[in-house]
Length: 228
Image 1 (cartoon, rainbow, N blue to C red):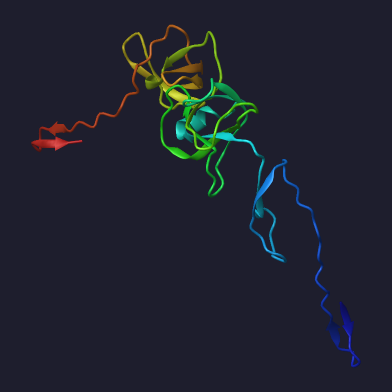
Image 2: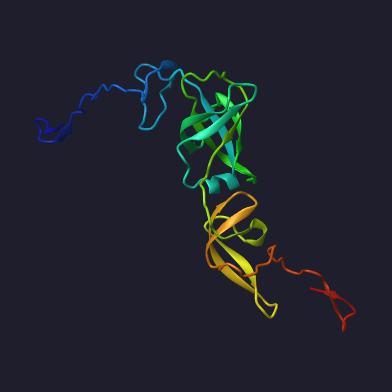
């Protein structure tokens, strides 16, 4: 608070600390499993102060880089098969994200998306085990995620396309045997074939494999040695 003393000099008096009490609610009911703050500890917005276990299990599968691209619009459910457990069941609330530090899956699993491959980036797919399904933490499982379906569409081998998500290039064979690089719009893929939505018409011939540059050394007749 600003003011002046007896001689007219400006003074300031600090205000007492302003304390506000707030109730932090958990997103779901459960048991408090961690509370990592002390009395009068200062916390910032976004800090993790505790953890609540809802008393249910979830299935978590690590996704490869290729699988992440194929799940740009993930479905809400997935099919789970627990090794040596009950019949395959549908888990709900499927969500993609990066696991929190120190987080371990209740039921670690392997994703099955029809032949996707590549290196992973730490992203996982997690869904909730429905009530009434008997599983235990630490069991292995396989998760099958349906990325989408397409019927009566134009497809080519994945080896014929440069690129696998949204856009790519194919090499079309002309009547005179020449090759034309053509951009295409891509759709779904099962790992072996990929949907071409735009850029090709039925009946056109494409190279089965994407061409690679020819880096074979060429003999220089003047120098007597290869160059390239």
